[in-house]
Length: 340
Ligand SMILES: [Zn+2]
Ligand SMILES: [Zn+2]
Image (cartoon, rainbow, N blue to C red; front, side, top):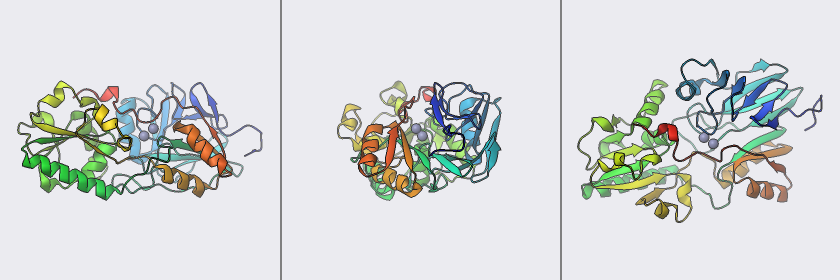
C-alpha cells in the first residue's frame, strides 16, 4: 500500500475521508470545498459543501438533498476524470439509484471506497461492479454473521400474502420503508393488481425522481388524495409509525421492511405487526465476498459493525483496520423526511 510519495491516497481528518493528492473528500461529514458523494442517503450526503461530484443516475436525488443552487458535477459510471494528481471514476454499488463506489488511482496504486452496497439484484439501480484494488474501504452496516438475507422474491411473496390477508379483514396495510431506495425497490416488485397503493409525501417525491430516470414503479397515489383505505397498501417512512399521520387509516396492520428485522425483538419493541427482512446493504456473506473479490492488500472497515468484520478478516489472513464513521448506518427515521 506504499505509494510514490509515502502519503496515503486517503486519510481521515475531522471532515472525513480526504484525498490530499486530488483535494477532495468522499462523503464528508461537514462543509468542504469538493465532496465526492457515493449516494444521497443522509449519512453520506451532507449539505453545505461548495461543489459535489456524483454518478449521473444519482444527480436528481442528490439535488433534492443539497439544494437547487449548489454546483453538482455528474459523471457516467466508469468515466475517468483527473483531479489534481489522481484519476477518479465512479462505479455502480447496487445500493440505491445512482449509488457509486469511488475508484482512485495514482501511479498504478488503486483505492476503492465502496459507500453502501449490496450484491443482490435490484430493478431500481445498476448492479454492483466488483473492482480490483490495493486498498478497499468497505461499509459494514450489517457486519455480523447473523445477518443473512432471504431471497428478495420470497420477501415480496410474503408481503403480498400479508396484504391479501389484511384485505380479507378489510384492513389497510401500512408498510414502513426508507423513503429513498427501499420504498422504490418494493414498489418496483409488488403486484399492483392486488389493490390500490398509496404513499407518504416523502416516498412520493422520491418516486417522482425515480420515474423521471425511467425506473418503472407500481402506480401510486399520494395518501393526501385518498379516502378509502381498506385493502390498500400504504408505503411510508418509518418515522410515521405511531403518529397522527398513521391514524387516518382506521383499521390497519403495520410492517417494516428492513435488514434490522433480522434481529429478534426489533419488531416487537417497535410495536409492529410484521417485519420483512429485506436490505439494500450487503449481508455478512455478501461483505465477505465483496472484500475477497477486490484482492485488496488492506481493507478499511467503516460504518456499522466494524470490529467483528475486522476481526474475522484478520483471522483469515486479511490485513484490515476499523475506520471511524460519523454516522452509523442509515438512520431509520430521517428527520428531514418527517413532513408530508
Ligand atoms: Zn445508504
Ligand atoms: Zn450508509
